[in-house]
Length: 100
Image (cartoon, rainbow, N blue to C red; front, side, top):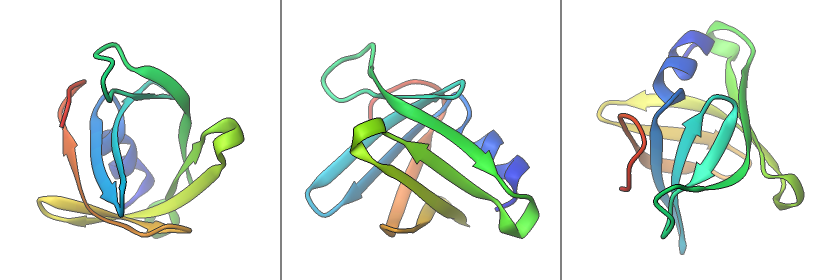
């Protein structure tokens, strides 16, 4: 996906993903990420940003002491793959803020 497509897909929306025993419900609000989990207001767990253009675009997440991760995002309608240091496949995106 291009930088514009990634920004449009993630901005203001919630990504639902599973990798092994880890599960995420991350709401992308502005440049911040909120893990919704058991807290409906969400817990601010880091920041996100998009860099590069067109086919070279990536989304980067910074979780502070939890590490930083960058991914290429692939649209596999209706699901998405986040490919990088950890490959997260079969993620879904919910419009707005909400649990998965």
